[in-house]
Length: 193
Image 1 (cartoon, one colour):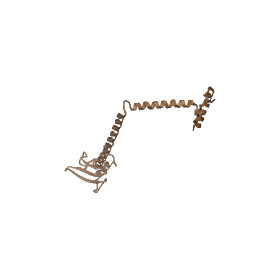
Image 2 (cartoon, one colour):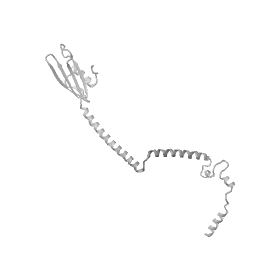
Image 3 (cartoon, one colour):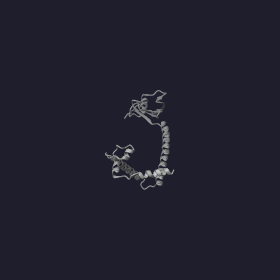
Image 4 (tube, helix red, strand yellow):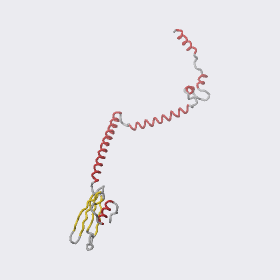
């Protein structure tokens, strides 16, 4: 073992100090570093690394500015509290949105059966009467179910009667004015002005 130590000491004493000429050999004639040659980038100019370093420093500075703006005046705990508050707000909004959807569906179901379509036709039932005092009024829901009220005005009095409508059809024969009122209510004919 002493022989090995002696050999290492002898080898260390044989190493010469680096001279000026050997320093010049570290950079070869083309200006590339031996270090770059050793890591496989011998043909890359060191100026590229400097430009890359400057670009990375600029990007890092911009990222730091964005982060500083994000956490401006905040510490980790207050930032965490803000994120938790946003999460809670998001849960609250989701619950309310789901509730609103259910409410809208319930209202839509109720509106299906409400009378939302109307057709009105005024007419003279008898030639001796003027002023179009008689009328046919059709009231329908979304499914075209409803009724027609027909009011006939004469010199003897006023008579009103109704006819049931199911899916846009009547089981009783309709008069001309009643058919027109039904067509207006269903959107088949335009309303009279």
